[in-house]
Image 1 (cartoon, rainbow, N blue to C red):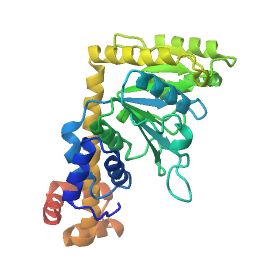
Image 2 (tube, rainbow, N blue to C red; image 1 turned 135 degrees about the vertical axis):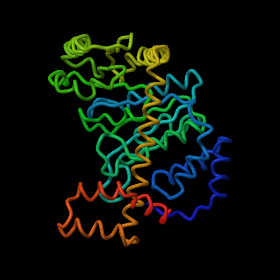
Image 3 (cartoon, helix red, strand yellow; image 1 turned 90 degrees about the vertical axis):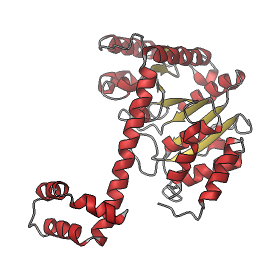
Image 4 (cartoon, rainbow, N blue to C red; image 1 turned 45 degrees about the vertical axis):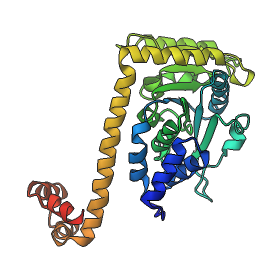
Length: 331
């Protein structure tokens, strides 16, 4: 975790200026969040009252499916309707700099100078699942900043790329005709999390077959949502099907709102985020306490020496209240 010399007064100023629409302060806050600064909890507390207005749309799918092009076209549609847009592109990590390999200027250059669009590239930093650890908090900052739509493009790691479900309100899975042979394998991954399927590059052979396979797979599953998951075809690079996709996103959002799925998803996301934060804090304090507390060090020492069985020692530590006492002393 980076130790930035940023006072709480500075953070309050940064957040206040960001909420006024000053982009440079948004950029500073995102840098603090992405670098896992010790200021992150304070930043999140300050922006909390301004969250919940933006719609977060996950764009996921295998590498080469054209996700960046789809986002670029959807952004154009949104801007044509005067909607403010935030874009988070999660890229592989550079082995040399530790940053994102692909830059936002390269991928979204048509929108780079548009003041109504804010683009941020993020590195996965070795994280599996298609997103970076800080992606959720960066999306929150864009929400507080006043963006109406936030597109989150995952890195494209394949069929297990489901972490986007912990952030996005609605998920578009982008596929290409060549994916037809993998539909059965996808049932436990992308097939389960999608709200909309888009078969991009539909001028290639096999697009119709893939669409039929997807619809058959969806119809074979029990779904109590009360609405279908649309399967659309497009050629994003040629502006074919993008208006239809944008409209489908709006309709699906309304369907999810009426059915309760939209709020249910956000409720589950907040619950999981809370548990994850608690786990992180407990783990951090426990590791620190092992070096500082004699009683806890004795427990660990007995396990290390093979005197105590790990599960038994952990149970005793929790049962006799020693861990709680340690946390009180180190708080």
